[in-house]
Amino acid sequence: MNAPLATPALKASRPRIAIVGAGPGGLASAMLLAAQGAQVTIFEKDKVVGGRTRTLSTPEGFRFDLGPTFFLYPRVIAEIFSSVGARLEDEAKLIRVDPLYRLFFENAASLDATADPVRMEAEIAKLCPEDAKGFRRFIAENRAKLEVFRPVLEKPFGSIFRFLHPEVLKSLPLLRPHSTVDKDLARHFSHPLVRLAFSFQTKYLGMSPFRCPSLFTILSFLEYEHGIWHIEGGCGSISDAMARVAQRLGAEIRFEAPVEHIAFEGRKASGLTVGGVHHAADAVIVNADFAHSMPYLVPEALRPRWKDAKIETARYSCSTFMLYLGIEGSYPALAHHTVMLSEGYQRNIRQLETGILPDQPSLYLHNPSILDPTMAPPGHSALYLLVPVPNLRDAKAQGLDWKTEAPRFRRLVLDRLAKLGLADLESRIRYERMVTPLEWRDEYAVGHGATFNLSHDLAQMLCFRPQNRFVGTEGVYLVGGGTHPGSGLPVIYEGARITTRLLAEDLGLRPGPAVPSMGGLAPALEPAR
Image 1: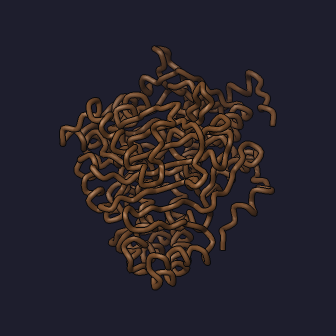
Image 2: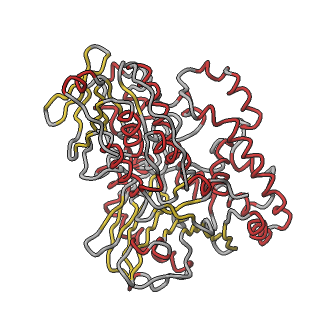
Image 3: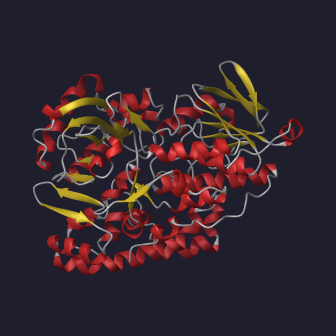
């Protein structure tokens, strides 16, 4: 697709949109708005696109996802590509993963999760034969739950009065807002480890299944219904593809261009200041981390719902301790995704919530090289290790200092990998990088190092979350995990559609092109039944 031709006169008549940050939400917004004829410029502080959804490449030839490794529910991003006249399958290669992941319940059992219902029932029966009968009931109920709640997730939620809308009221009986994920799962599964197999996914939101609202049983449902995908070259390849398409549509991406603040004329955004230079704009989209960026981007007087004190005292997700390891040799018996859940999982959760560094941490290990040889040089593997840890604000209350704690914690988590059969791992390390909550805050501009953003409890969802059309201003819009509808790649992509629809309405942009067929990708996205 060629970039649209723009004479000086035509270009002058097109609305100017400035986007702060080239994360997934900013890139999706750039694609959608450029396709509608807007002049779009993304200002990105780093040298690459993707934000936390980027690929780290080393001189030795190892590739690692920085953040997300599970690619879920690709239908939303496929529809975004289609809506701008592109095809996702032409821009990135998606590989469906089976088994979805291997779960290790420490000192108890293991389970290979699969979207095949017959095999999955057999896996559940290894833990509790009676619970196997609950699997298809769980899937059917959550299919209905997603169907009834999807209209809520696909629209802005700017007022408490939206709760009175018929589509919201209709969803309440299935959503059971008074319940938690664990309690809701108890209606289907009696065994605590089976419930844990369907509830640990709340960690994608940085939350406990014993506190997370029952709505989020849809997280595990999406894995079983629509699969987990690997993106060849890492999830950063999707970000690269989005950037390419946005640029073909005429969007500009300026790298190493950190935004100092948004300029206002009264309440109306008039542009951005970058390197002391003003860049005029008719609207601004903020794709930077909310807690980190809002205090300096927008004057406090224009943030009536999100004053500095509220941002500081809001509830945030946990953080993560990361090791990116280039390994000589391979581990073919290790699954693509492995989750080890601590024997003291509930105690582990309580430690995270109170700012205590877990002494018996759960962990997640990504071994993409068995499926994707582009992730490591021949004869080597790229391993990604993630351990949930307290965010910096909660850890500070306990006196946790990562500068002194990191080496000891690294030793602890490497020793725990022996339980997965990796006792010889350290002698095979040829490349290593560590990221602690300090690096998330200082290198990647993540507020409090809370890698999953604002918590998703009921008091910080829907109209109680920062809104897509930012309240208190004119012409400032939000995308990303810190705004409605929330965190996670498919949800962030959906949030970009909400935000760009609002902006297009406000500026009178023409509708985008008709949505073409998704072609060969559509059958692959159908649920596994």
